[in-house]
Length: 77
Image (cartoon, rainbow, N blue to C red; front, top):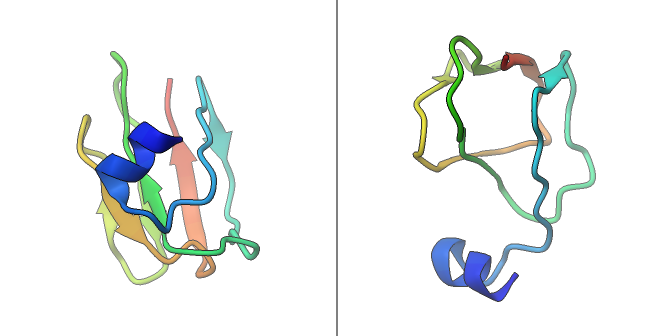
């Protein structure tokens, strides 16, 4: 966690690693701070689409967003 906080800031309170995940439409209502996501690995397709129209799908780059707002579908294979 110390390494993550050095990278992303002291306000980081949790980290989740997912593999081969498919998330339907949802909100991360209990997030204490902004959400951050980074896509890793060798895969094709997949994106996080937000209700404001932004779409995150670039690999090895951190994205910050308000997880309490609805996210559309995220798929990776």
